[in-house]
Length: 543
Image 1 (tube, rainbow, N blue to C red):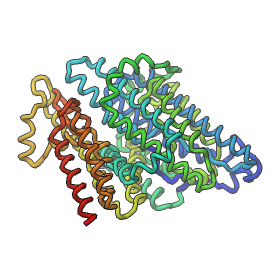
Image 2: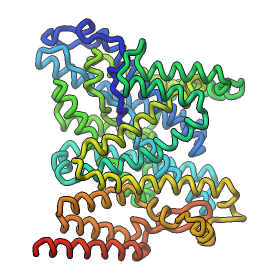
Image 3: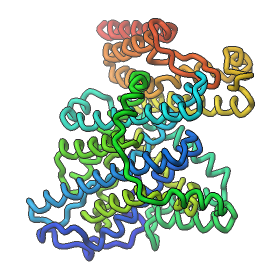
Image 4: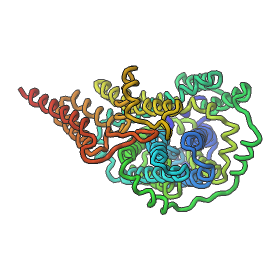
């Protein structure tokens, strides 16, 4: 997901002094591009540090995979996309004889990063371990599933260039934004808020700087994000949170060196069986990326830079496909905030420089060392801010009468995040082992404590699709389009019946999707009942 900040807040750049006259023709670098690069580069830096942190800490990936395949592929995807958008802006500026075009901002998709880690890669790994596979085999399978999800997202983004208008008309905005907001509030917002309050001196101070810069519109001596990270690093050192031990430094230093990625066609083919079970994550996330990019292209047009939709989406899709084909599981996207970058004086140089610097950092394996010097706590308030803006946008960018549909669409994502925490707590307490595997016996004690784990596990499976359909149903009910609401319910019933929605089963250490004919019959019957009620409502409306 694009970083949702206003990059003009807290900057010292001056558009009128930094750039050539609008009619003087484009230049590859102007003075305002430095401020733009500091903002966009910082955004991408935080995402890359998150990739390293989540792959190491949550997924347990070895450094050889992270620094040998994932990061080099991520870096090349950033190079391809940023340079392509810079060339696009230069060509259009040359054709128009104007020098004030600002390239579309581009980088790693924040929400897809979290969605693929927690909704695809981690479940695949835990399921593989539960089936008796070795840790190495489980990691490989998890990575392959992530590659397929990323490639699918890139294909959808590229295809969106040819059918964007149809998608915009067909998908209710409230359903899409609410689903995205649910993931943002749970996996990103609440996750980092808990971490903020676990490290309050660093976390809350950095959060205050971000709130002041991006919500308070206070003019600061440095770009708000950069100042927040510097404050966080200083406090981390002062409080002892950041400690550089020789062994860890040496381990990260050993990853420094040029590593060129290679085509991973074999890995993608080997993981092909992971394609179908995760389409419920891949397809909605791809659609989100398409529609989010469309909104950001429209935002650029309002700011005076009208870019062709098809080529812009194709570049976006190509960047994501490059990532997947070379070994990265993390899609890229067009970031929001083009008017802010333009207002601070950034033009074309900030884009290509961001691609080159981030790309070289990934190819040279520098981010392990950088992560030791810049802890996640120093930048996590920026990610928390993204979650807040995504959630706020879900309400602000939809008609006020659809607010209840947005709220309903938030719930499956929050339930999925809660399910993740519940299972992690059970595993930490000793369950989920060979001696004490997960089993239906654990549900009754939880239910007696008013923890309806079975419902959380059901909502976790296909949570993105469930959120879209529930929010869509309510949108159509509010608009008194009861037949459309019934159709949403019937789609949910069909997906549930074949086990692609809600149907779940225990493994020894997790709960996973349970596809098969009739495996989700209880939920299918429930949705069928909803469809009948909506159709009756349609008949009553005509009386």
